[in-house]
Amino acid sequence: MWDLSGQQKFRDMWPAYLGACSAVILVVDCADVDRLAVVQEAARTAHASAPPHAPLLVLANKRSQVHVAQDVRSASTAAAPPAPRLLSKEEVERVALASSVAAAGRAVRVVLANALSGDGMEAAAAWLEERLAHQQGAD
Image 1 (cartoon, helix red, strand yellow):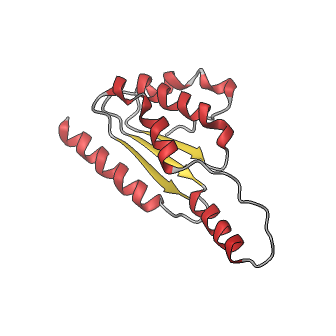
Image 2 (cartoon, rainbow, N blue to C red):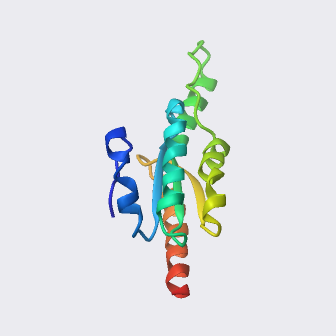
């Protein structure tokens, strides 16, 4: 397992590591709308560099945490500043799947998650485990 930083200076290294991987997990910070282009680049690189059988799991991180904050703001009687705009699951799916035509047959799943609370992590791990078991059975 490798944690390939999303920082620009490390992106050129992604293809070298993805070429022999069994799966790709892409963590997307849904609170950082301005980085959608980076997410798109990462998804394209994954589709182009990872083996076609390697599933792509996209964790749309920080979604549930912000939902709670929005609920608290809505319940407040005092005027609260507007909640920050977040990437929706649909936006993340659109970007993650945009390059999938080039990787026909790749299993792709977007899961709403919160790494701090653990929300969504069990479902994500179960899906990935199922895909990897299916992949091993096909070998």
